[in-house]
Length: 209
Image (spheres, one colour):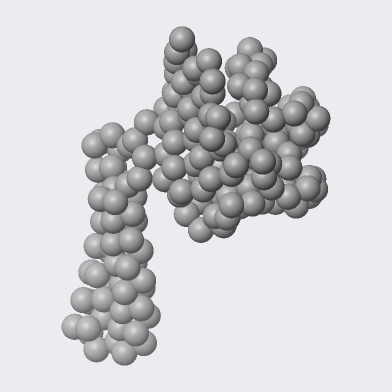
């Protein structure tokens, strides 16, 4: 039996032996929007560089040349990795272990030391917000170390990726109890309940910057 739950861009698929979390890929219009966001500042820098060259402003030429090189490199990297070479995200929990596709990390059940839910993980995108994460780790639990690792992992493209921890951010700080129950039931098929170390607190305990 398969049950599919959709929450915005997140898709949770549950079977009798495990679950799979996926994220809908960016739409054409979303990709176009982000490309335009890159083109506008790049065009401004190229225009400023052109004016500097015409005016013979050596200092400005050096500054805007550097900015253009950096901006073009970033734009090419973003378009290639984020759009052209986009890897679909998938977190899978089944009898083999825990797999995070897209960044290719795998943990066997025999290597799992602990797992659990942690909320209040402070992130920054266009605004600060807290979210709940589920983690699977091959190292002993350490609250400060884990929360820092989760912040880094979900902060952006430069997050560390190792086989010591697999995590998934739910995009919100509180999760429906029924969804948490479904997740736990599948994990308990392969891991002892004693390995769960969770830290779920009410929103009132977290202060936004």
